[in-house]
Image (cartoon, rainbow, N blue to C red; front, side):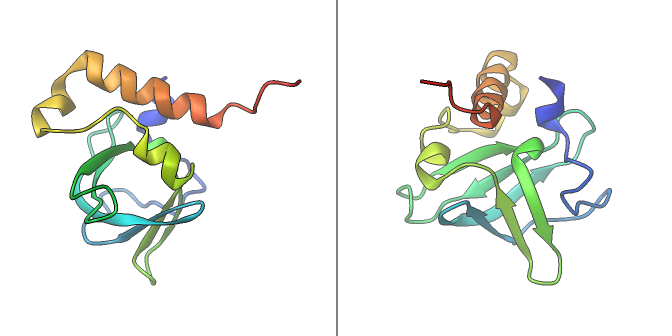
Length: 120
């Protein structure tokens, strides 16, 4: 599961790059902007302010869910749809970023989004 907490080599991420303020989009539309970023190796993630899209809540998105970073356009694209991002384990406080159980739940959720659907 540790791979979900690191940027993919082909994501466009460069070490120590600040993504704060970048717009964030899911596969089917905008979800907000990067409010905070954790760049500790093996625990990289973004806290995304969703604005009014999810009633002013924030979501924690592991770096492994980032598919494309466009530094010129200042955008981050993440895997999953808006509904899938909205259904992720709820982020309420920064202290959760040190809670192993919460981080496991978030990591497992995003790993499950990468799996192809089961065959009928």
